Length: 164
Image 1 (cartoon, rainbow, N blue to C red):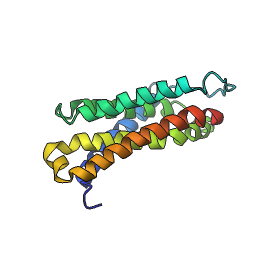
Image 2: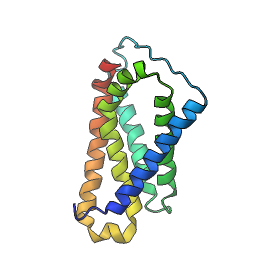
Image 3: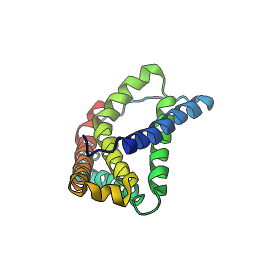
């Protein structure tokens, strides 16, 4: 834990969760009422093509978050903010009766997915000097992040649809 720079962990969490809260408030200001209507699972959704599509999209987000390492952290901040806003806006528009169903299906794949994005954002916020200070540890973090993207894609493809 000594190698983890808590300052940057707090920055990443602060940007994401403050955007999440703003998304909830904006959703409530617009008086959104999203309805939860369970759809029967179609075999076409649970396929290797879906897995490839989801994994590719999540890796793109992971890489966009990492580009902040080179580009003054701007893409990282924009991506964290937009992801937090969208999730907050969506969840803010659900009724309390519907939110439990949605949270269950989202949390199955969402937890490893968001944690992997936090890892990429953390690395981006480190900058060159801090990254090189514990280079081996940070490279392991990146590998863990990519593996978590893979696990999240598998869960999103093969497990989460059964809880929708």
